[in-house]
Image 1 (tube, rainbow, N blue to C red):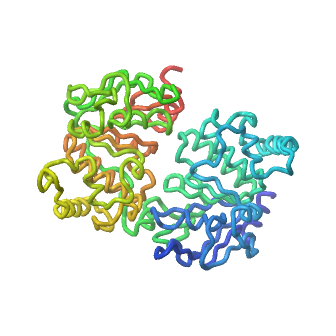
Image 2: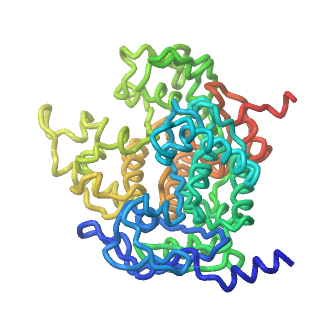
Image 3: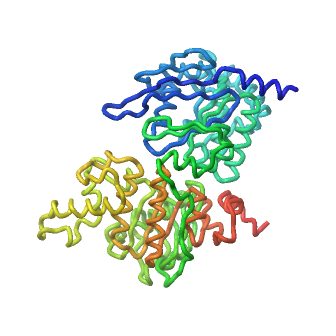
Length: 521
């Protein structure tokens, strides 16, 4: 009977959130155009869209980071002004950001009360927060040690702290921005159980994610944004991933990777007992050994921060190490004295780094300049020994941009003028067009919309089919499973195990990512 009353109340209640005619421009760029959306109380409402679709801008307006140029916000049927985040919190809105806003050397309890202290004395605030935390843990299953330092707990528990912060401030509406980006599959499943419990207790949740599988699994309703406009809102049970992808992109999208079986050839990359110690004396790589052959993709899976970045940096010539690395049987110097990126390129190694904006591109330089960085001494770019033929280089860049579908295809625009997906295409065009023997590629589709993901995956498979070796690092298990011919899982600077995609699943890989080997129970 009680459940029936809850259902009836939800059906007749005013929307928990209603946005009417929201518009926001940044100079000539119209980020949001006359957006209206209704989110019903006690539901999980997904919002999806390509990069630059306006999702983050819309949520930033709702949370008080931006002020809309036009439009109205209603909370539980009441028109509400939200000039800043404190006003949003007073209105019962909490936001869990993709990159957590926690003080690493504070305890869980200290982080929860930070900014919500009762007066000048800290001790009473901590006592009150501890009592509330115990109650919240019991009610929502959000167990976490209140006295643990943030830097000493995993990302899954850090996310719980962010949710507890919002609940401690009495949030009835929770906005979660890409909440599973740093979680193992088991942690993501636990998060979904927590969200289901929050929903059952009457909380309203807005979930921003690019993962269609998560939308289908956890949401009640999903809204699709494209180019700053709201294109559709549908019941999740009445749609499909294929339909949502088409609504996002405006055309049909292949959601699976279409590839033939690999035909591995000779060994290209051999890594033996690779070790890295950082500037603080912490060992980040602890005896890594692996190999990659021509015509295959070795995917490296793992939660961010377990050594994958250091592995790519060593192989790309950005960090010294000890151990042995050879390319096609010839050793590479790892001391850092001669192991720069230029010498790697001369050995047939191309590198698409994990952070395109800080390591892959110079954002204030033109696209044509970025398309030759690292290769600018090549004879094909020189008019003579002293000068570069800029006109010819610009034409070459334009042809590469056309082949890699970079939009807009203008080589004179600065890198910062392009969307994230098109920035990634610039880096891929530069590296793949060199026809390398080995491609190192980190997080190839991080922050990239679904249409660009499809294109990038096709380019990686085409390079593999051309007989090249590829070392792929990604935190996206779906991507690892669909692209890789073999999978190595890293945890705490070590290879936990190696699997064939056809002989494993996300549950087993998730255990390995958490440092648990199911073969050695």
